Length: 345
Ligand code: FAD
Image (cartoon, rainbow, N blue to C red; front, side):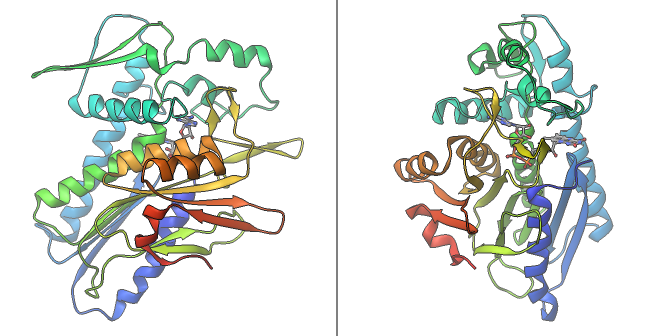
């Protein structure tokens, strides 16, 4: 279990903001737990059928189900079975798995290949997957060998009325859905709450969140974008998502150092290496957390200038924080402005 993630602090900060609610009149149920190698939190304002205990056990079971489907950390998950298979024949998967892969592939195409969920062999080679951290940085030969297994165009999803399949063009293709798993999970918990008649809620899984309606105080939900440093927990900006999903990706918590140099978990599929530019955090507001969670990683690969240009061209709500010699610099797209309550601190 990794504890040093961007989203963990994001959960803590929104809980902090939620403290405003303590003098509230409306009852609120609140649960927390662990999933996908990180933490989740759910707040429900009003009733939930069966109360707090039912909310906890049903959300835990739901998230366990999706973890069992898409985790690359569990060798027995459905995705791991696909990764272990060297067959080039269609491999039956659930509709949910097909949906998440279709979305990730679309985001990959939309971002000209910088989001690539087949980049797993490189993620693992650099020590950011289930494999151990390297003691030395990988050699060019190791990187070239891993890159032979990578390529989003080698992964195919087929969906028909009654079944869905994944298919690979090379036997060693390996799919890593870590970049979108938390967003997908947040969407699924939100759908579950809606199906139970809950319309005032906040769901957070690490840096991915979904919210709707009002908090216990009767105000719209507000979320904190964390200041991108692993030294202090502080608020960079505050947003009011108004029912939309928010997801943040950062390079400042999940990294390792060799010989004084920092290596981030965000891999540029073109170089096969961790990113080296100054963009340290990207936040996206979109209609689903699945979409936002894929886009935030893609923007992290692009770097500050390309990411902002991409956001403006595509009318995406994006907030970027770059590291400077003296601290941090925040920029955001025009589409992000309406969501900002507190631009920066
Ligand atoms: P994000 O920015 O959302 O994603 C970055 C991650 O995406 C990288 O860590 C890498 O895996 C991948 N990536 C890097 N570059 C690219 C790229 N160019 N294109 C596409 N993908 C890229 N961690 C554990 O330590 N233990 C566990 O048991 C565990 N179980 C998990 C189960 C599930 C179902 C999932 C989805 C994840 C699990 N994780 C686990 C991983 C972990 O919790 C995070 O998902 C992961 O560290 C990245 O999340 P993030 O929000 O920090 O970064």
